[in-house]
Image (cartoon, rainbow, N blue to C red):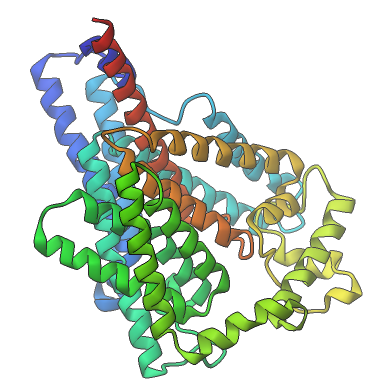
Length: 429
């Protein structure tokens, strides 16, 4: 069984016995600290509360800490750096096309900036994937993300109650990247399954109370953003998290889901119902019209540059060159992650990214049956599925949430697969 575990983890023998093992353990703990700091600052945004820490650039510091510790651990232990297996060629192939697109981009400066952003996203992906190498570390990561999400969730609720510069007069927001109601809803859709999984995994009463408050605040803030995609995605994430597993768990999940939905319906403000009612007449909705105009531009780009697109980060800059008269003059983003990739990088990049997303979803779904990490795998699958649903009508391919979800999903599925191999070896013995 030990051989199965070592092979599955990709470990080599320590170079100098116990000393190397202890050094690797210390670097591993530091890598985990970097991952936890990253997800905590991504949600809690400490610079908003304490402006003086902005100069520390905590997001970059967390990324460098985690990435550096992962590399140091690999050097002292002799382990292989985990990248996601052969399928990760799809992800890195997509990134390579983005980096090369500066050669044909209509806006080389924008493509260079986008290439740098993708490089940072890949560092986050590799750092988190390698840092979360035990079930306990995965559970801690989900719990920290869920608790940290209290900041934007409560902040969104307070903003709405204060009527503080509401978007379109009715939609709440918070600060930083969450100043956009859609981004706030998307971030909380990710944290919602995390909170539910962490609630089920802990027996600490104080932590359960905190996580329960997080779920309530998350749902309230999502509703108050008025993000229709966020509301649908939250319902999907809830269903995928609570309605899979043993029959007893499913029945409990149905009761909990029904209670949460009833609470949302009971306390939702009038503006929620007014904006949701536009589902019945999308042709009269200004946001839908904007998306249609963006997709007209995409159609022109695909007609003229189907293989290579306009270059990474170039979609919004392509409006003057490719927009038909019917699209108007207001420059917009693509409002769909896959269409954005198609317009900026072409069909080959789209196929690579789409294939990669499929691999991560499939592996994480299968891990949901694992007796050790099944709860966490189901939560990550629900978070990724909900986030991607939002991406179909928003489109943010340069998203830290997306890449850390890739990493957590693969880390969870790897450990679940290892557990399965070890159990099979025990049965064979």
